[in-house]
Structure formats: structure tokens, C-alpha cells
Image (tube, protein in one colour):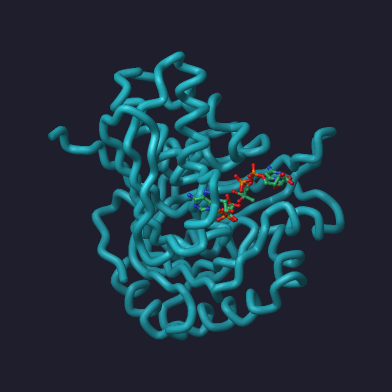
Length: 290
Ligand SMILES: C[C@](O)(CO)[C@H](O)COP(=O)(O)OP(=O)(O)OC[C@H]1O[C@@H](n2ccc(N)nc2=O)[C@H](O)[C@@H]1O
Ligand SMILES: Nc1ncnc2c1ncn2[C@@H]1O[C@H](COP(=O)(O)OP(=O)(O)OP(=O)(O)O)[C@@H](O)[C@H]1O
């Protein structure tokens, strides 16, 4: 039996998120510094006669009833675009909370595309996969890369991020799902200018200082829809060693920035057990995590 292709689907974290405009089709243009956390789902792809998806993991429950998982939609879109038969046994290990602002569904779709790119022997570039993926979700191009990046356009314009220092992240979600369209709809006020960022930060404290002058423009509307976001931010800010706390994406997950993964893991353990919480390092930084 062939070993299935396994791809990590790490959580996306928007360290800042400025809404810079609104297009005629209703989508918003964004400026965001995006990083990926060690917290991740996983997608496995193995050869099969038809298409199938199995779900496992502690966050799979909410998705079980959905006929159109983003993993299956991504597989169908790639099969059509590449002109190859829709054949794969897919498995999703779901650990990230659903509809929580850390792009779990987008990360899963991106991981499925990367896995099928190999399984089907396509050899496509990330940019070509991203073109297929964008109609399925604005976050998927960034998730295909799963590397720190500066996001522009509606999510499809990706530029290199500043060189990041070693750091730790806490992620916490009050277990309240927030729908992205509702949060964008509830946003009022002017648009923001894109941020001005340096080429590199010497350490996490310097990074936190610069990020503190920026915002997540979706935080106020998300808080109006889900007041628990404010509570999560207060709790993260109070953790020993927390350098900055902010909401990610359209919420309700918030992050805390720490000097290193160990401090973040210790901090996460102090948050209420009723919340989904995680602490560790960036994806690919060889971190642990709780
Ligand atoms: C807010 C972010 O999390 C920041 O990374 C993402 O832009 C959201 O990306 P996503 O969940 O993949 O979003 P999609 O599934 O493409 O869009 C859901 C809905 O959010 C709104 N939306 C999304 C992305 C964007 N740049 N402008 C928008 O206005 C639109 O109403 C859209 O119908
Ligand atoms: N594999 C999947 N994982 C999560 N959600 C999925 C998946 N497949 C389909 N969905 C649907 O997509 C919706 C958005 O889920 P997701 O977890 O990506 O939201 P999000 O974290 O708010 O994303 P973003 O940060 O990109 O706005 C869910 O409400 C769910 O109905």
C-alpha cells in the first residue's frame, strides 16, 4: 500500500489587518502581515478509484454534517483545472476551531491542493495552485505558501514579510463561531492606509512595539457581534510576558505575541480551559506547543 501524502494545514494569524478599500464586487482590499502558527490541521491524500473524505480530530464534529467541505471543493476545482480524473482518498485531521479567523478551512483547502499536486504528479507552482484556489477563499493563496507574507489585494497579492525574530504565539478562541461576511458587513468608518514596516526586527519586543501602532480593523465589528472577544483580549494581555494582544482575521480567535515559544506555551495553559487555546512557535520554527 502506498503511504499517503501528508500536508500540515497551519493556522493563519493576521498580526495586523488594515481594510484599505472596497471593490465594486463587495470584496475588501486588505493589508496584512500574515504568519502561520505551529497549531495545525493535517490533510492526507492517497490513491483511490473515486473521491472520498474522512474526518477525525477534536474539532471535526461541526463539519461532519457539511456536504461541501473546502477540502472536497479544492479537489474538484484542481481536477477540473488540470483535466485529471477526480481520484483520491482524502483524510482531514481537524484540530483548529471552525469559523474562527485563523483560516482553518482555507488552510485545509491549501493543504489538499499541495497534497494532490504531488499525488496527481502535476508539479504546479504555488502561484498556479493559488489561481485555482482564490475563488474558494481569499485566504487560500497565503495558506498555499504557509510562510510569513505581506497580504494585499483581497488576499491574492503576496509579498515577502519583514525578517521575523524568534517569538511565541498564544491563540485563544471563546468557542463562538463568527461568520466572516457578517463581520465585514458590520464594519463602519473610513478605510486605513497600508502599514509601513521595516525590513527586519531584531527581537519580538521591537516587533510588538511596531505592531502596537497598527490595528485589526475587523476587531470593533467582531466585538460588536461577539462581546467575548474583548474578554479574550483582556485575558491574553494579562498573561506574564505578553508583548501584544490582538484579534486575528475576522475573529473570534485572538493572539498574544511572546518572546519565545516556551513563554507562549506556559501562558496558554493559564487561560480558561473552556476556551480553545494553544501556545507555541511559528510554523516551521521547530516549536512544540500545547
Ligand atoms: C479576513 C481574512 O481572514 C484576513 O486574512 C480573510 O480575508 C478572509 O478570507 P476567507 O475566509 O477565505 O474569505 P472568503 O471565504 O473568500 O470570503 C467570505 C466573505 O468575506 C468577505 N470578504 C472576504 C475577503 C475579503 N478580502 N474581503 C471581503 O469582503 C466577503 O463578504 C466574502 O463573501
Ligand atoms: N475544512 C473546513 N474547515 C473549516 N471550515 C470549513 C471547512 N470546510 C468548509 N468549511 C466552512 O467554511 C466556513 C469558514 O471556516 P474557516 O474555519 O475557514 O473560517 P475562518 O477561520 O473564519 O477563516 P478566515 O480566517 O479565512 O476568515 C465554516 O463556517 C464552514 O462552514
